[in-house]
Length: 254
Image 1 (cartoon, rainbow, N blue to C red):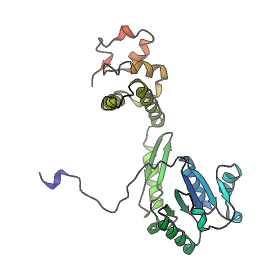
Image 2: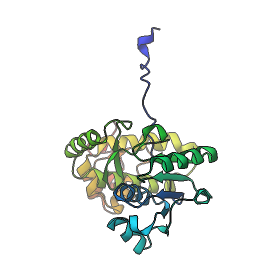
Image 3: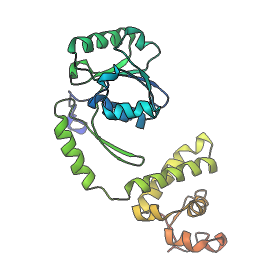
Image 4: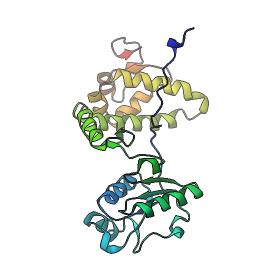
């Protein structure tokens, strides 16, 4: 079998992940405009944030986060002890020498860090993100062209359906309900295969129209491994036996 059968390795990229930092401790050094953006990013991911910056260096948004108690605040310049019990460090200060020193300290302690505007001193980059409920799409230029990342991200967002976020929320809810119906680990492959069929069978509009009653009715078709059309679910109401799968026009087998 020739090499053309396998994907070509393209070095120089980043491993793009959805990093789960809920309840992780994030230190933000700096209080200006860049810091404000970083703070919002990690608050959106439910992190516990501490901001270290002299008060005179705070912009209005950072000051607002502090006033509302959304972040912890230390009114002074960075000190090495600030790295104690920290999972991630973000710096956004106009002092290259101090930033590099923070970077070195983070490396010694094996703490993931991002030094704003210094790509070589970053364990990870912030991309341009489109958010619609549970949907997040990130465009990264690996630190080479943040402005172009914004342009690409806007182009992608403009071509997405308006209701895609809501549809994803409904699928997430259905998956949660399915795990209660079929909780055993050995059911995993069947659960996955059935959810794929559901996702393929229903349009975004169908998914948005579903309520929990429809989902509960749909889950009754998991055991026989069938996927009825949404119109059939709506028509069934309480009379499940009348729609037991014998009607070919109601049940999809794809």
